[in-house]
Image (tube, rainbow, N blue to C red):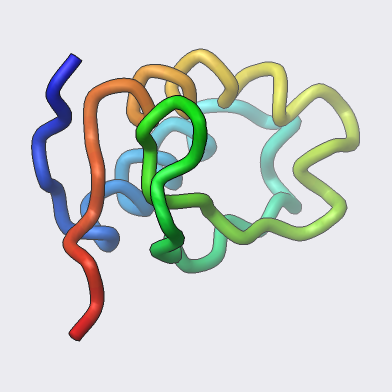
Length: 79
């Protein structure tokens, strides 16, 4: 499957928007989306978070969106 190139900031904003819908994500930090060499799935980015994302079920709320974004989008390679 071919991925669309999307700005890292746009991916981050989509994750933040989803997190804001869930009370359990109130203290979760969604940091920057960073580039890496494509992994075994072909995705070339990850997102930094804090430990709070794993507490209270926040990550379970965000995983469907994260998986969808990782399947559909890559970010531009840095200069």
